[in-house]
Length: 274
Ligand code: FAD
Image (cartoon, rainbow, N blue to C red; front, side, top):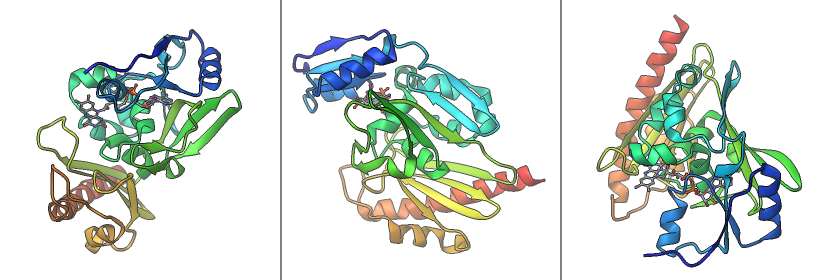
């Protein structure tokens, strides 16, 4: 199918992009296009104007310091995955990113675009929520920091205003004595997961992040209850039936994967303490 007609804008600065978005209520940001363009082609979205961030300078930067990793809006999944400093600072980023789609899609799709797109089956929203990261959102009204815990309103729905651009996402670095793990089951590698689980083990807290189980990414604190972590998590989750898996099968995957990622994260934490 072909998309409904739309106006295409390619601003040369962030200010110009923000002005366009504020002035045209039917406008939508275009980043890598790997989620939006299929929606346009299927006519599940029909914005009057697309504001392409591809010509805005300064949005394709990755910066790493001892506090964490900041990822600019136009950083492609593939570039983030290939950055060794990113993996050294926060190993959960490459662990999860290697499961995002296929190489061709990772070459174009942006990690910030995935975070803002708010697909509960996507890996990076769950990772951002689990680690307690945030998104920097800018509009003509100014800039604000949105904690990941306040970013998701529902399926495919973020809390950003229509005229806000997410200029970057920030992931905290992994601390001493901390470990992470990630696992998912998909029909084929690169497909969206039927269930995915991420774990973050710190000396004083153990938390799990779930994707593809509920309407939004879900984080569950299992500190002190690790032996029954999967049952604790399932009490917070509402797995559903769909064409890919039954609710019972999803609950089974939650049990199996929770055990695996917790073991992996604990092992990493032990290694980083020694
Ligand atoms: P776009 O498609 O350009 O935009 C997506 C949405 O986010 C739009 O609503 C747009 O307006 C908004 N948006 C984007 N950037 C910004 C911004 N900076 N500020 C404000 N709004 C913004 N993803 C996974 O996580 N896991 C998978 O397994 C997976 N498999 C895929 C398989 C296929 C076949 C395809 C086509 C895609 C798959 N994806 C998967 C999606 C892919 O990761 C996309 O790249 C990503 O979801 C969106 O990033 P994008 O840059 O392409 O955003």
